[in-house]
Length: 406
Ligand code: FAD
Picture: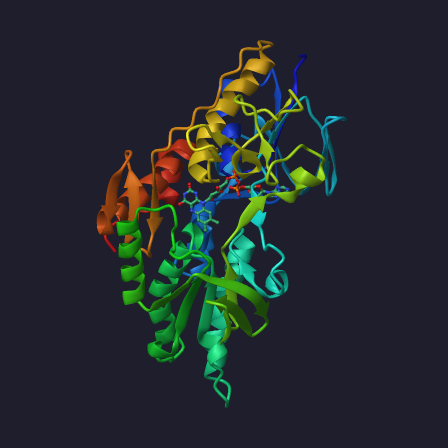
Protein backbone atom coordinates (compact mmCIF):
# COMPACT_ATOMS: atom_id res chain seq x y z
CA UNK A 1 0.00 0.00 0.00
CA UNK A 2 1.28 3.44 -0.91
CA UNK A 3 0.94 5.65 2.24
CA UNK A 4 -2.42 4.24 3.30
CA UNK A 5 -5.17 6.24 4.97
CA UNK A 6 -6.01 4.78 8.36
CA UNK A 7 -9.31 6.11 9.67
CA UNK A 8 -10.35 5.49 13.28
CA UNK A 9 -13.99 6.17 14.16
CA UNK A 10 -14.72 7.09 17.79
CA UNK A 11 -12.39 8.33 20.51
CA UNK A 12 -13.60 6.00 23.24
CA UNK A 13 -11.45 3.48 25.08
CA UNK A 14 -10.89 1.38 21.97
CA UNK A 15 -10.40 4.19 19.45
CA UNK A 16 -8.20 6.38 21.66
CA UNK A 17 -5.88 3.60 22.73
CA UNK A 18 -5.55 2.40 19.12
CA UNK A 19 -4.70 5.94 18.00
CA UNK A 20 -2.15 6.49 20.76
CA UNK A 21 -0.49 3.16 20.01
CA UNK A 22 -0.37 3.82 16.26
CA UNK A 23 1.03 7.33 16.67
CA UNK A 24 3.94 5.75 18.56
CA UNK A 25 4.50 2.74 16.33
CA UNK A 26 3.93 4.15 12.84
CA UNK A 27 6.15 6.55 10.95
CA UNK A 28 4.06 9.49 9.59
CA UNK A 29 5.77 9.04 6.22
CA UNK A 30 4.36 5.54 5.99
CA UNK A 31 0.67 6.16 6.77
CA UNK A 32 -1.87 8.91 7.44
CA UNK A 33 -3.82 8.45 10.67
CA UNK A 34 -7.20 10.18 10.99
CA UNK A 35 -9.27 10.07 14.16
CA UNK A 36 -12.95 11.08 13.94
CA UNK A 37 -14.99 11.90 17.04
CA UNK A 38 -18.20 13.79 17.82
CA UNK A 39 -16.42 16.05 20.31
CA UNK A 40 -12.92 17.36 20.77
CA UNK A 41 -12.64 15.39 24.01
CA UNK A 42 -12.40 11.77 25.06
CA UNK A 43 -14.44 10.77 28.10
CA UNK A 44 -14.12 7.98 30.58
CA UNK A 45 -17.42 6.19 30.05
CA UNK A 46 -16.86 4.19 33.23
CA UNK A 47 -17.10 7.40 35.28
CA UNK A 48 -20.30 8.75 33.73
CA UNK A 49 -22.56 7.45 36.52
CA UNK A 50 -20.62 9.70 38.90
CA UNK A 51 -21.26 12.72 36.65
CA UNK A 52 -24.93 11.74 36.44
CA UNK A 53 -25.27 11.56 40.22
CA UNK A 54 -23.28 14.76 40.68
CA UNK A 55 -20.51 13.22 42.78
CA UNK A 56 -17.87 14.01 40.14
CA UNK A 57 -17.76 17.01 37.81
CA UNK A 58 -17.75 16.16 34.11
CA UNK A 59 -14.52 18.10 33.56
CA UNK A 60 -12.73 15.38 35.53
CA UNK A 61 -14.17 12.77 33.19
CA UNK A 62 -13.37 14.42 29.88
CA UNK A 63 -9.90 14.65 28.48
CA UNK A 64 -9.16 17.03 25.58
CA UNK A 65 -8.04 14.86 22.66
CA UNK A 66 -5.18 17.25 21.88
CA UNK A 67 -3.75 16.56 25.37
CA UNK A 68 -3.20 12.93 24.47
CA UNK A 69 -3.01 12.71 20.70
CA UNK A 70 -0.07 14.26 18.88
CA UNK A 71 -1.77 16.54 16.35
CA UNK A 72 1.42 16.60 14.24
CA UNK A 73 1.06 12.88 13.69
CA UNK A 74 -2.71 12.43 13.72
CA UNK A 75 -5.29 14.29 11.70
CA UNK A 76 -8.17 14.87 14.13
CA UNK A 77 -11.64 15.47 12.65
CA UNK A 78 -14.35 16.70 15.01
CA UNK A 79 -17.49 15.48 13.30
CA UNK A 80 -20.31 12.96 13.58
CA UNK A 81 -20.22 9.74 11.61
CA UNK A 82 -23.47 9.24 9.71
CA UNK A 83 -22.76 5.99 7.88
CA UNK A 84 -20.03 3.72 6.60
CA UNK A 85 -19.87 2.50 3.01
CA UNK A 86 -17.49 -0.45 3.17
CA UNK A 87 -17.88 -1.37 -0.52
CA UNK A 88 -16.70 2.11 -1.51
CA UNK A 89 -14.23 2.44 1.42
CA UNK A 90 -15.87 5.69 2.49
CA UNK A 91 -17.24 7.17 5.70
CA UNK A 92 -20.04 9.72 5.50
CA UNK A 93 -19.80 12.45 8.11
CA UNK A 94 -22.31 15.17 8.94
CA UNK A 95 -19.94 17.67 7.32
CA UNK A 96 -18.16 15.71 4.64
CA UNK A 97 -16.82 12.37 3.60
CA UNK A 98 -13.59 10.44 4.22
CA UNK A 99 -11.86 7.77 2.14
CA UNK A 100 -9.96 5.03 3.88
CA UNK A 101 -7.65 2.16 3.13
CA UNK A 102 -7.90 0.73 6.64
CA UNK A 103 -10.84 1.45 8.94
CA UNK A 104 -11.18 0.96 12.70
CA UNK A 105 -14.76 1.17 14.01
CA UNK A 106 -14.93 2.13 17.68
CA UNK A 107 -18.26 3.96 17.91
CA UNK A 108 -19.29 2.47 21.25
CA UNK A 109 -22.79 1.76 22.50
CA UNK A 110 -26.28 3.20 22.75
CA UNK A 111 -29.18 2.40 25.05
CA UNK A 112 -31.43 -0.53 24.20
CA UNK A 113 -34.98 0.10 25.36
CA UNK A 114 -36.55 -3.17 24.10
CA UNK A 115 -39.69 -1.38 22.94
CA UNK A 116 -40.84 -0.63 26.51
CA UNK A 117 -43.49 2.09 26.13
CA UNK A 118 -42.37 5.57 27.13
CA UNK A 119 -38.74 4.73 27.90
CA UNK A 120 -37.26 6.50 24.88
CA UNK A 121 -39.39 9.59 25.47
CA UNK A 122 -39.31 9.93 29.25
CA UNK A 123 -36.36 8.03 30.71
CA UNK A 124 -32.81 9.32 30.99
CA UNK A 125 -29.77 7.24 30.04
CA UNK A 126 -26.14 7.39 31.13
CA UNK A 127 -24.60 7.41 27.67
CA UNK A 128 -22.22 10.34 27.35
CA UNK A 129 -21.20 13.58 29.05
CA UNK A 130 -24.29 15.49 27.93
CA UNK A 131 -26.84 12.85 28.90
CA UNK A 132 -25.15 12.39 32.29
CA UNK A 133 -25.05 16.11 33.05
CA UNK A 134 -28.74 16.31 32.15
CA UNK A 135 -29.59 13.69 34.80
CA UNK A 136 -27.67 15.60 37.46
CA UNK A 137 -29.37 18.87 36.55
CA UNK A 138 -32.82 17.27 36.33
CA UNK A 139 -32.50 15.80 39.83
CA UNK A 140 -31.27 19.13 41.21
CA UNK A 141 -34.10 21.02 39.47
CA UNK A 142 -36.69 18.73 41.03
CA UNK A 143 -35.16 19.08 44.48
CA UNK A 144 -35.14 22.87 44.06
CA UNK A 145 -38.72 22.86 42.81
CA UNK A 146 -40.02 20.68 45.66
CA UNK A 147 -39.96 23.46 48.25
CA UNK A 148 -41.23 26.05 45.83
CA UNK A 149 -44.60 24.44 45.26
CA UNK A 150 -47.52 24.83 47.61
CA UNK A 151 -48.66 21.29 47.02
CA UNK A 152 -45.64 19.06 47.66
CA UNK A 153 -45.11 16.45 44.96
CA UNK A 154 -43.37 13.28 46.14
CA UNK A 155 -42.59 12.36 42.52
CA UNK A 156 -39.92 15.08 42.51
CA UNK A 157 -38.00 13.24 45.23
CA UNK A 158 -38.36 9.69 43.86
CA UNK A 159 -35.60 8.45 41.58
CA UNK A 160 -36.19 5.16 39.77
CA UNK A 161 -33.27 3.31 38.23
CA UNK A 162 -34.22 0.57 35.77
CA UNK A 163 -31.73 -2.28 35.83
CA UNK A 164 -29.65 -3.77 38.61
CA UNK A 165 -26.65 -4.66 36.48
CA UNK A 166 -23.25 -3.07 36.76
CA UNK A 167 -24.24 0.43 35.66
CA UNK A 168 -27.52 0.55 37.62
CA UNK A 169 -25.88 -0.58 40.86
CA UNK A 170 -22.88 1.74 40.48
CA UNK A 171 -25.27 4.63 39.83
CA UNK A 172 -27.49 4.01 42.88
CA UNK A 173 -24.28 3.78 44.94
CA UNK A 174 -23.32 7.28 43.82
CA UNK A 175 -26.85 8.56 44.43
CA UNK A 176 -26.75 7.17 47.96
CA UNK A 177 -23.70 9.38 48.55
CA UNK A 178 -25.10 12.42 46.80
CA UNK A 179 -28.64 12.58 48.21
CA UNK A 180 -27.67 13.63 51.77
CA UNK A 181 -25.66 16.55 50.30
CA UNK A 182 -28.56 17.55 48.05
CA UNK A 183 -31.03 17.38 50.93
CA UNK A 184 -28.87 19.76 52.95
CA UNK A 185 -28.52 22.10 50.00
CA UNK A 186 -32.25 22.20 49.19
CA UNK A 187 -33.73 21.99 52.75
CA UNK A 188 -35.30 18.59 52.21
CA UNK A 189 -35.80 15.89 54.83
CA UNK A 190 -33.60 12.98 53.76
CA UNK A 191 -36.23 10.47 54.85
CA UNK A 192 -38.55 11.72 52.11
CA UNK A 193 -36.21 10.83 49.25
CA UNK A 194 -36.52 7.39 47.60
CA UNK A 195 -33.90 5.73 45.38
CA UNK A 196 -35.58 2.70 43.85
CA UNK A 197 -33.78 0.10 41.78
CA UNK A 198 -35.97 -2.18 39.66
CA UNK A 199 -34.45 -5.38 38.34
CA UNK A 200 -36.05 -8.16 36.27
CA UNK A 201 -33.86 -11.00 37.58
CA UNK A 202 -34.33 -12.44 41.07
CA UNK A 203 -31.14 -10.66 42.14
CA UNK A 204 -29.11 -7.62 41.19
CA UNK A 205 -25.60 -7.99 39.74
CA UNK A 206 -26.44 -11.39 38.33
CA UNK A 207 -23.28 -13.25 37.42
CA UNK A 208 -21.46 -11.91 40.49
CA UNK A 209 -20.68 -14.17 43.44
CA UNK A 210 -23.74 -14.39 45.74
CA UNK A 211 -21.76 -13.32 48.85
CA UNK A 212 -20.61 -10.19 47.05
CA UNK A 213 -24.15 -9.46 45.87
CA UNK A 214 -25.45 -9.77 49.44
CA UNK A 215 -22.71 -7.44 50.65
CA UNK A 216 -23.55 -4.91 47.93
CA UNK A 217 -27.28 -4.97 48.65
CA UNK A 218 -26.75 -4.61 52.41
CA UNK A 219 -24.36 -1.73 51.90
CA UNK A 220 -26.74 0.11 49.58
CA UNK A 221 -29.90 -0.64 51.57
CA UNK A 222 -28.24 0.69 54.71
CA UNK A 223 -27.80 3.96 52.79
CA UNK A 224 -31.45 4.13 51.74
CA UNK A 225 -31.56 2.32 48.38
CA UNK A 226 -34.67 0.16 47.81
CA UNK A 227 -34.43 -2.88 45.54
CA UNK A 228 -37.43 -4.34 43.75
CA UNK A 229 -36.14 -7.54 42.13
CA UNK A 230 -38.00 -10.00 39.89
CA UNK A 231 -39.92 -7.02 38.56
CA UNK A 232 -40.33 -5.90 34.95
CA UNK A 233 -40.60 -2.25 34.05
CA UNK A 234 -43.72 -2.03 31.90
CA UNK A 235 -44.08 1.65 31.13
CA UNK A 236 -42.37 4.93 31.75
CA UNK A 237 -44.54 8.04 31.97
CA UNK A 238 -43.35 11.64 32.43
CA UNK A 239 -44.14 11.56 36.17
CA UNK A 240 -44.32 7.85 37.07
CA UNK A 241 -43.36 4.32 36.12
CA UNK A 242 -45.34 1.09 36.02
CA UNK A 243 -43.75 -2.24 36.88
CA UNK A 244 -45.05 -5.78 37.17
CA UNK A 245 -44.09 -8.20 39.91
CA UNK A 246 -45.73 -11.56 40.67
CA UNK A 247 -48.39 -10.85 38.05
CA UNK A 248 -49.42 -7.57 39.71
CA UNK A 249 -48.85 -4.11 38.28
CA UNK A 250 -47.75 -1.25 40.53
CA UNK A 251 -47.18 2.44 39.77
CA UNK A 252 -44.54 4.62 41.44
CA UNK A 253 -44.55 8.39 41.16
CA UNK A 254 -41.17 9.45 39.80
CA UNK A 255 -40.13 12.51 37.83
CA UNK A 256 -36.71 10.93 37.31
CA UNK A 257 -36.34 7.51 35.70
CA UNK A 258 -32.89 6.43 34.59
CA UNK A 259 -32.73 3.44 32.28
CA UNK A 260 -29.59 1.41 32.89
CA UNK A 261 -30.79 -2.02 31.86
CA UNK A 262 -29.47 -2.52 28.40
CA UNK A 263 -26.99 -1.38 25.82
CA UNK A 264 -26.44 -2.30 22.21
CA UNK A 265 -23.74 -1.47 19.68
CA UNK A 266 -23.96 1.88 17.94
CA UNK A 267 -26.77 1.39 15.40
CA UNK A 268 -24.61 2.92 12.62
CA UNK A 269 -22.93 -0.48 12.34
CA UNK A 270 -26.15 -2.33 11.52
CA UNK A 271 -27.55 0.50 9.41
CA UNK A 272 -24.36 0.51 7.29
CA UNK A 273 -25.12 -3.04 6.19
CA UNK A 274 -22.44 -4.98 8.07
CA UNK A 275 -23.27 -8.57 8.90
CA UNK A 276 -24.22 -8.47 12.59
CA UNK A 277 -24.92 -10.79 15.48
CA UNK A 278 -26.99 -9.17 18.28
CA UNK A 279 -26.37 -5.80 16.58
CA UNK A 280 -22.57 -6.18 16.73
CA UNK A 281 -19.98 -7.31 14.24
CA UNK A 282 -18.76 -10.77 15.21
CA UNK A 283 -15.11 -10.25 14.47
CA UNK A 284 -12.55 -12.75 13.28
CA UNK A 285 -9.81 -13.64 15.74
CA UNK A 286 -7.65 -10.81 14.33
CA UNK A 287 -10.46 -8.27 15.09
CA UNK A 288 -11.44 -7.76 11.44
CA UNK A 289 -15.02 -7.88 10.23
CA UNK A 290 -15.90 -11.22 8.62
CA UNK A 291 -16.62 -9.59 5.27
CA UNK A 292 -13.90 -6.94 4.86
CA UNK A 293 -10.14 -7.41 5.19
CA UNK A 294 -9.64 -3.68 5.67
CA UNK A 295 -12.18 -3.10 8.48
CA UNK A 296 -11.29 -3.64 12.13
CA UNK A 297 -13.94 -3.39 14.85
CA UNK A 298 -13.23 -2.64 18.49
CA UNK A 299 -14.96 -2.23 21.85
CA UNK A 300 -18.74 -2.35 22.19
CA UNK A 301 -19.28 -2.57 18.40
CA UNK A 302 -17.36 -5.88 18.27
CA UNK A 303 -18.65 -9.23 19.37
CA UNK A 304 -15.96 -11.60 20.63
CA UNK A 305 -17.03 -15.11 21.56
CA UNK A 306 -15.75 -16.70 24.74
CA UNK A 307 -14.87 -20.21 23.60
CA UNK A 308 -15.13 -21.55 27.16
CA UNK A 309 -18.68 -20.41 27.83
CA UNK A 310 -19.99 -20.27 24.26
CA UNK A 311 -21.29 -16.77 25.07
CA UNK A 312 -19.94 -13.39 23.96
CA UNK A 313 -17.63 -11.51 26.32
CA UNK A 314 -19.64 -8.72 27.97
CA UNK A 315 -18.88 -5.27 26.60
CA UNK A 316 -16.35 -3.64 28.92
CA UNK A 317 -13.69 -0.98 28.88
CA UNK A 318 -11.23 -3.65 29.95
CA UNK A 319 -11.86 -5.67 26.77
CA UNK A 320 -11.88 -2.56 24.54
CA UNK A 321 -8.47 -1.50 25.90
CA UNK A 322 -6.99 -4.98 25.46
CA UNK A 323 -8.38 -5.21 21.92
CA UNK A 324 -6.61 -1.96 21.02
CA UNK A 325 -3.21 -3.70 21.32
CA UNK A 326 -4.22 -6.36 18.80
CA UNK A 327 -5.88 -3.85 16.46
CA UNK A 328 -2.92 -1.41 16.53
CA UNK A 329 -0.49 -4.28 15.97
CA UNK A 330 -2.50 -5.71 13.07
CA UNK A 331 -3.03 -2.33 11.40
CA UNK A 332 0.74 -1.84 11.46
CA UNK A 333 1.27 -5.29 9.95
CA UNK A 334 -1.07 -4.40 7.07
CA UNK A 335 0.61 -1.02 6.54
CA UNK A 336 3.97 -2.78 6.32
CA UNK A 337 2.55 -5.09 3.69
CA UNK A 338 2.70 -8.28 5.72
CA UNK A 339 -0.20 -10.63 6.25
CA UNK A 340 0.52 -12.46 9.50
CA UNK A 341 -1.99 -10.88 11.83
CA UNK A 342 -2.10 -11.77 15.51
CA UNK A 343 -5.18 -13.16 17.22
CA UNK A 344 -6.87 -11.32 20.09
CA UNK A 345 -6.61 -13.17 23.36
CA UNK A 346 -8.59 -11.58 26.19
CA UNK A 347 -7.03 -11.66 29.62
CA UNK A 348 -9.81 -10.88 32.09
CA UNK A 349 -8.07 -9.46 35.14
CA UNK A 350 -11.22 -9.18 37.24
CA UNK A 351 -14.28 -7.03 37.75
CA UNK A 352 -14.81 -4.37 40.39
CA UNK A 353 -18.11 -2.53 40.91
CA UNK A 354 -18.20 0.63 43.00
CA UNK A 355 -20.97 1.17 45.55
CA UNK A 356 -20.31 4.88 45.96
CA UNK A 357 -17.02 6.57 46.66
CA UNK A 358 -15.88 4.53 49.63
CA UNK A 359 -17.32 1.06 49.10
CA UNK A 360 -17.07 -1.53 46.34
CA UNK A 361 -17.05 -5.23 45.57
CA UNK A 362 -14.99 -7.20 43.12
CA UNK A 363 -13.35 -10.38 41.98
CA UNK A 364 -9.74 -10.21 40.87
CA UNK A 365 -6.97 -12.64 39.95
CA UNK A 366 -9.32 -15.50 39.13
CA UNK A 367 -11.56 -15.88 42.17
CA UNK A 368 -10.13 -13.56 44.80
CA UNK A 369 -13.05 -11.65 46.34
CA UNK A 370 -12.68 -8.06 47.49
CA UNK A 371 -15.03 -5.98 49.68
CA UNK A 372 -15.12 -2.48 51.13
CA UNK A 373 -12.05 -0.25 51.10
CA UNK A 374 -9.82 -2.89 49.49
CA UNK A 375 -12.17 -3.09 46.50
CA UNK A 376 -12.43 0.72 46.44
CA UNK A 377 -8.66 1.01 46.29
CA UNK A 378 -8.56 -1.60 43.51
CA UNK A 379 -11.21 0.30 41.51
CA UNK A 380 -9.20 3.49 41.70
CA UNK A 381 -5.98 1.67 40.82
CA UNK A 382 -7.72 0.33 37.67
CA UNK A 383 -8.90 3.84 36.75
CA UNK A 384 -5.48 5.37 37.36
CA UNK A 385 -3.70 2.61 35.45
CA UNK A 386 -5.75 3.47 32.37
CA UNK A 387 -4.84 7.16 32.61
CA UNK A 388 -1.19 6.25 32.94
CA UNK A 389 -1.36 4.03 29.86
CA UNK A 390 -3.23 6.64 27.84
CA UNK A 391 -1.33 9.80 28.68
CA UNK A 392 1.51 9.02 31.08
CA UNK A 393 2.19 10.65 34.45
CA UNK A 394 1.04 14.09 33.29
CA UNK A 395 -2.49 12.86 32.58
CA UNK A 396 -2.52 10.71 35.69
CA UNK A 397 -1.68 13.64 37.96
CA UNK A 398 -4.29 15.88 36.29
CA UNK A 399 -7.16 13.41 36.18
CA UNK A 400 -6.33 10.54 38.52
CA UNK A 401 -8.36 9.47 41.54
CA UNK A 402 -6.21 9.73 44.64
CA UNK A 403 -8.90 10.22 47.31
CA UNK A 404 -8.58 6.55 48.21
CA UNK A 405 -9.94 6.53 51.76
CA UNK A 406 -13.01 8.77 51.60
P1 FAD B 1 -16.94 4.32 24.16
O1 FAD B 1 -15.92 4.34 25.21
O2 FAD B 1 -18.36 4.34 24.48
O3 FAD B 1 -16.59 5.42 23.07
C1 FAD B 1 -17.29 5.63 21.88
C2 FAD B 1 -16.83 6.95 21.29
O4 FAD B 1 -17.43 7.12 20.01
C3 FAD B 1 -17.21 8.17 22.11
O5 FAD B 1 -16.13 9.05 22.21
C4 FAD B 1 -18.36 8.80 21.31
O6 FAD B 1 -18.42 10.21 21.46
C5 FAD B 1 -17.95 8.44 19.89
N1 FAD B 1 -19.08 8.39 18.97
C6 FAD B 1 -20.23 7.70 19.13
N2 FAD B 1 -21.02 7.87 18.06
C7 FAD B 1 -20.34 8.66 17.21
C8 FAD B 1 -20.62 9.20 15.92
N3 FAD B 1 -21.77 8.92 15.29
N4 FAD B 1 -19.71 9.99 15.35
C9 FAD B 1 -18.53 10.27 15.96
N5 FAD B 1 -18.21 9.80 17.17
C10 FAD B 1 -19.10 9.02 17.80
N6 FAD B 1 -16.53 -1.33 31.73
C11 FAD B 1 -15.54 -1.80 32.52
O7 FAD B 1 -14.64 -2.53 32.02
N7 FAD B 1 -15.47 -1.50 33.85
C12 FAD B 1 -16.36 -0.67 34.45
O8 FAD B 1 -16.27 -0.41 35.65
C13 FAD B 1 -17.42 -0.14 33.66
N8 FAD B 1 -18.30 0.74 34.20
C14 FAD B 1 -19.23 1.34 33.40
C15 FAD B 1 -20.06 2.32 33.95
C16 FAD B 1 -20.99 2.97 33.17
C17 FAD B 1 -21.84 4.05 33.77
C18 FAD B 1 -21.13 2.63 31.79
C19 FAD B 1 -22.14 3.33 30.92
C20 FAD B 1 -20.31 1.65 31.23
C21 FAD B 1 -19.35 0.99 32.02
N9 FAD B 1 -18.48 0.03 31.48
C22 FAD B 1 -17.47 -0.50 32.26
C23 FAD B 1 -18.57 -0.36 30.04
C24 FAD B 1 -17.57 0.45 29.21
O9 FAD B 1 -17.66 1.82 29.52
C25 FAD B 1 -17.77 0.24 27.72
O10 FAD B 1 -17.72 -1.13 27.45
C26 FAD B 1 -16.68 1.00 26.93
O11 FAD B 1 -16.82 2.38 27.10
C27 FAD B 1 -16.68 0.64 25.46
O12 FAD B 1 -15.63 1.33 24.83
P2 FAD B 1 -15.72 1.76 23.32
O13 FAD B 1 -14.35 2.23 22.92
O14 FAD B 1 -16.36 0.69 22.51
O15 FAD B 1 -16.75 2.96 23.26
